[in-house]
Amino acid sequence: MTTTPDDPTTTLPGRPPVVDLATWQAARDELLVREKAHTREGDALAAARRRLPMVEFDGTVEVVGPDGPVPFVDLFQGRDELVVYKHMWYDGAPHQGQCEGCTTTAWHLKDAVYLNARGVSFAILTTGRWDEVASYVEFMGYTQPWYSVRDVDAPVGGSMGYLTCFLRDGDRVFLTYSTTGRGNEPVNGSLSLLDMTPYGRGETWEDNPEGWPEGRSPCWSWRSDADGNATWGPTSRPVPQWTRPGATPVETLGRHGHHH
Image (cartoon, rainbow, N blue to C red; front, side, top):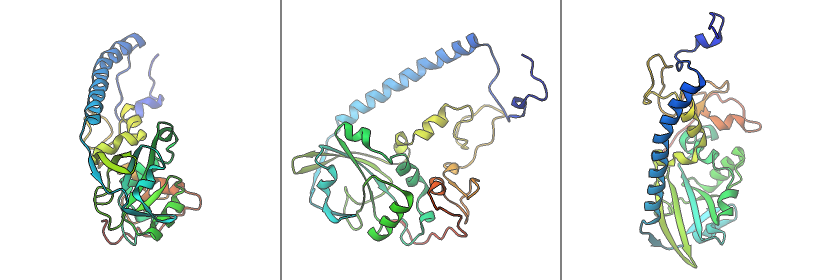
């Protein structure tokens, strides 16, 4: 097939070379060898993760949820395992002023039925005051349980931005694993799908061929204005918040205070 000037593909700012299916399959099979090695190394890491020691702590420490203070052990909902995400919080900020990165993680964890089916409970913890947290959760339409761990010591409270795993043995509770930064990425299926596309995440750190679209700062796509333009300016908020029923554009970001 000949490419004519009218062919829209010629307007793309850099694209893979065009080959026949057999040539593509050969290149694809070559990459598959590396992908399988990557998968097996991931399995080996998970096996090592399961062999980590664990730390016992007081499961009666109280966290605050919709029904008031409850002991942390209640978050297991009778199951033996618990995964939590620790969501950063900016005191006094409006909904659009909360953390973009934490929003992406929480948004991708709106439903825990498949965890529950495997005997694992899920909850989101944050350092915000419960009245602010409850309002935010309602605005976002989240249905998974949230709890305030304000002034609660680690490993239940402490630093935010982590995925953390716990094990219960009767009334005894243990910390088994925790990760932060890009260790949170497995939750975000959107990033994994973007990694499969020709133009990837569109971030400057990525290794791209010559002529590819210019990358932007990390996480640029996580915050946009009402028209969907990526921006971290005064008219932006975390991307999923524009999809909430009744969500309207804001004149100012309005973030103040610091997260804890």
